[in-house]
Image (cartoon, rainbow, N blue to C red; front, side, top):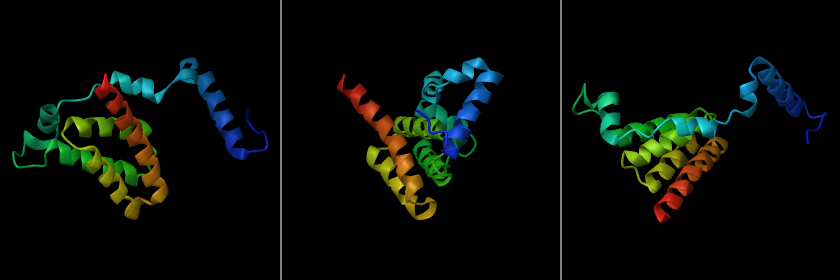
Length: 136
């Protein structure tokens, strides 16, 4: 239940009402549902698309994904879908769970503890679902 005296909750309720009026399908939009539409790219495709095709000695896909993850963390970890997708791609490109965690933790010095914590939560969601799939 929303508190009518809380300005943040009032703003969120107003934004949700506005979105519902502009496009009724946005009322039930879920970023996680959108993520399922975007497949994880194979490492070779990432390297071809993002540099190895132009510069054979360029950064490998794993390094590119870890750099992307650090940038998304630096932005304040506002982009939950992008962080989760980047973690999936980093894993596909060969990054370990420890490398992903270290990349995010390293950004605490530059992005701040709240951004690092939020990004770590998003990454943990992906890592937990990956562990569940590995058990099956």
